[in-house]
Structures are given as structure tokens and as C-alpha cells.
Length: 120
Ligand code: HEM
Image (tube, rainbow, N blue to C red):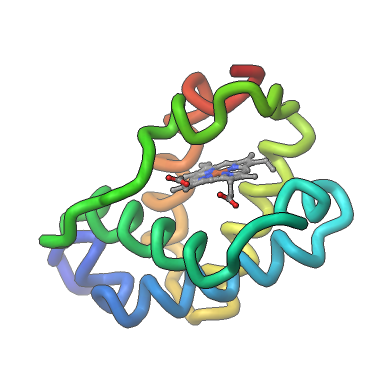
């Protein structure tokens, strides 16, 4: 079993960009949340989420976007929407052949951000 950083075990920037691309496309076709992304620039969101995940899992990248509170402020995101995003995260990790242990670590990071994203 590899004991490197989660960043390395996700396949570095290339692996994380593939995940972020799958994730955006799942969000854009998920009936619970798709309306949130109608006006989004796909490339920009994929770039920012790639940076965010790289920087947050041990990669050398710098995240150039807003912090989670600022990014989601005023959206009043519900628990159901948050769950839909977590579902899409697991599905996107699975689609990119990320193993169970890495999925668990990823999900815990995503879950830990809920206070900055839910109903803000
Ligand atoms: C673990 C949970 C989440 C993470 C890590 C996350 C991460 C991010 C990041 C990195 C950005 C880009 C910030 C920027 O523009 O500077 C963003 C934007 C956004 N997020 Fe989230 N997010 C999460 C949950 C959610 C949820 C539950 C929703 C509700 C559907 C949501 C909806 C959005 C929308 C609509 C944008 C703006 C996209 C755009 O600029 O076009 N996010 N998020």
C-alpha cells in the first residue's frame, strides 16, 4: 500500500484534474443541483476545483479561488444539495478508479467543510 500524500495517491495533478472534470459533469447532470451550475464556466470551475483539491491534499499548487465561505456565501445551500455533491464526489472517485481508502480520506475532508458551505 502506498503511504504517500493523498495528493500522490490520487494520481497528482493529472489524476485530480480528471476527477474534477468527471465531478463537474456529474453536477451538471444531477437534477438536485444542476441549476446551480447553469451560468458556470466549465473550464474555470474545473481549474479551481483541481487547484483546491491539489492544495488541500498535499500538492505543491496554490489555490487561486475564494475560500469556501466566500465561494458559497448567499447560496443558502441545503443538506440535500450537500448530500448530492458528496454522492457525486464518491461516484467521480469510483469512475476514476480511486480505491476505498482514498475515497474515505477524500470524503472526510469534504464533510469537514460543511460548516463553511451549508446555509451560508
Ligand atoms: C465539499 C463540498 C464542496 C467543495 C469542496 C466545493 C468547492 C468549490 C470551489 C473550489 C469553488 C470555486 C470557488 C471560486 O469560484 O473561487 C466552488 C464554487 C461553487 N460551488 Fe462549491 N463546493 C462544495 C459544495 C458545494 C455545494 C453543496 C454546492 C451546491 C450545489 C456548491 C455549489 C457551488 C457553485 C454554484 C459554485 C460557483 C461556480 C461558478 O463560479 O460558476 N458547492 N465550490
